[in-house]
Image (cartoon, rainbow, N blue to C red; front, top):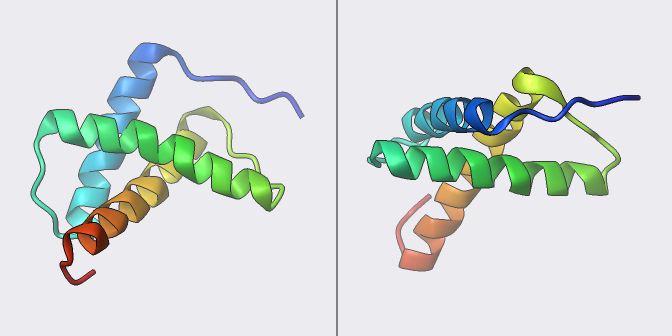
Length: 86
């Protein structure tokens, strides 16, 4: 299976979208920069977790799904660290 990586500009745009969607799902209040960071880092985290189970998501849609899932996980972890309810 040949998975094409996404470019930097695409990663930023899709990361921002993934971060915004996860922000809406988790009812959190973040800015654009934090949405981009959470979406990109979230995609890396989710892809690493999925790789443990042998699942590989590729392309823009896979990156978006992984970014949403990963960003939601990061928001939940951040809330637990601060002692807030998930």
